Image 1: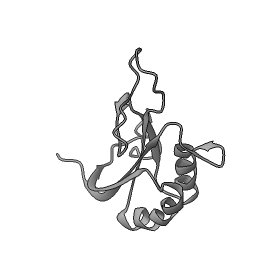
Image 2: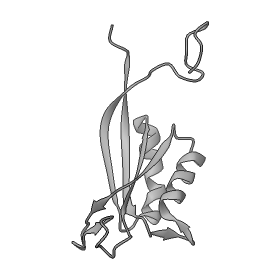
Image 3: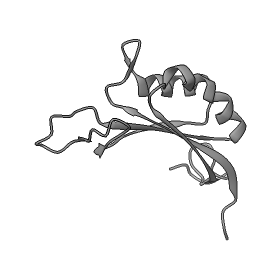
Image 4: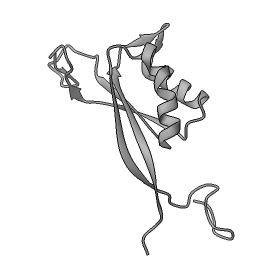
Length: 121
């Protein structure tokens, strides 16, 4: 039996690891604002290598002097909630990449979601 799916929107915000907002890492500010907005969740992923509009390659390789690695913040929620959050990013992310993708969420039982009588993992 196929689990039920739900249409959603995935917001990906890509910034540099060293980008800041009022002396705080920019990716942290995005996560905290998403939390304050009541979005379903946010995760931050640190890249190992990448380049942006400046064409400078940032990498974790030993011989590289660059430490400003790409960082991606992923947020998935209902389309209306994600679109309502976008104005928060207008001032926060003037130079980063903001991407929206349609996606499907497959919910699997977890904490608080397990059917009655099923132990949570």
